[in-house]
Length: 174
Image (cartoon, rainbow, N blue to C red):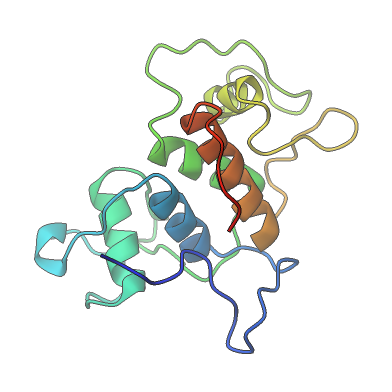
């Protein structure tokens, strides 16, 4: 059993919810939220990111597990950039993929004014709207997928997804 917190504070003991969420932080939240198991190093196969060490740290196990399961891809230069901030669109795609959503064949029925139905994010955004806005829109009906997402926003998005996945079950507070 893993007793480490899903979301932890910084070294000063504070959460810093107004900070931008990093690629690693968002990935860890998404995987743990959806009970995606971290693999041990030998199970990763031969694939490697240039900027992610191959060791038994939580960072490498989380990132390589997600890559192994096909939930993430790195950049064309072979890096993952775990400490880079993530955008709203990237986080939405990551948490929805880790939950197995949208399912193949799901039709894009709704989107926001700044996302066309043929945008690669459209299926994820459409499903998000259907599920009561996993990542809510901004005023004016825009989702602004390239804007950075804050740590508190990543936690809220995953909580909304958990509530959907639990099908309205009464969830306790943390």
